[in-house]
Length: 262
Ligand SMILES: Nc1ncnc2c1ncn2[C@@H]1O[C@H](COP(=O)(O)OP(=O)(O)OP(=O)(O)O)[C@@H](O)[C@H]1O
Ligand SMILES: [Mg+2]
Image (tube, rainbow, N blue to C red; front, side, top):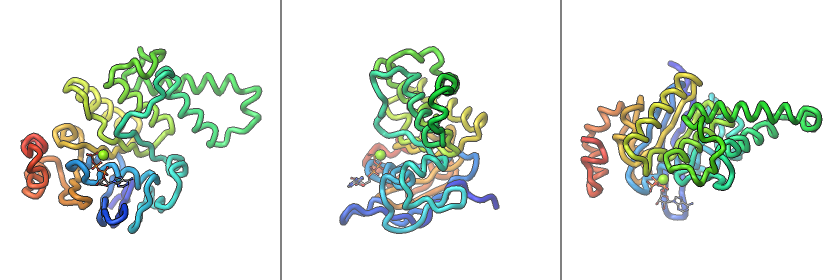
């Protein structure tokens, strides 16, 4: 059996008396696109926050490439190769698309061991290579023609993709996306799905994508896990999950048929 790229084992997260994640076990296989869906408040964002070290697990363990990452800082976890986007876009609005990506590259270079020597004579070289790399990442997400646009002036769908380019600037092996399709029109979702499939094919990036409803992730996911009230209530292929009575029941009260795509 191939070792999981990411393994979350019996992870719980508590906020006072509230159990946001209740002993959740989940794996992301290398090269796969794994989705997590669930109704509002199910614990989806909490899951990404605990993986990336923003929240502390009250129990369980998280392994990335076979090594424990729970308890490490967000910074250390990024360095190990996990990048993410947030549910609400967090771009620097007045900076250009290119600058937004370059800033994340800069951080990478800075903590990647670039010493003062580099910053003097070789600074221009570094800047040029950062610019080239940022351009390449923008092209990957279909923003080649938008590099000089201020992030805030880009249409929402493009802002979402810019966030992905910025996440890629840290050269992740695993990309975590928190509701990347929220608020997008159907054509934009198709474009996003193609980008995610290309990322996996061309850059061997594995993806853990969260969504509120299922049809959005069905088209691209190998497996879907379903959270409800902090517990994993189902997992399997998109087709199997869609037919699960537990999943349909979890979405009752919020337009079940639409949510699970039947
Ligand atoms: N920092 C926090 N402090 C206290 N409670 C929190 C915190 N973060 C999340 N929660 C609670 O944990 C539960 C799970 O929240 P979470 O944001 O993970 O849900 P979600 O599945 O992402 O929902 P949505 O679809 O609305 O984004 C909710 O009851 C939420 O109020
Ligand atoms: Mg959320």
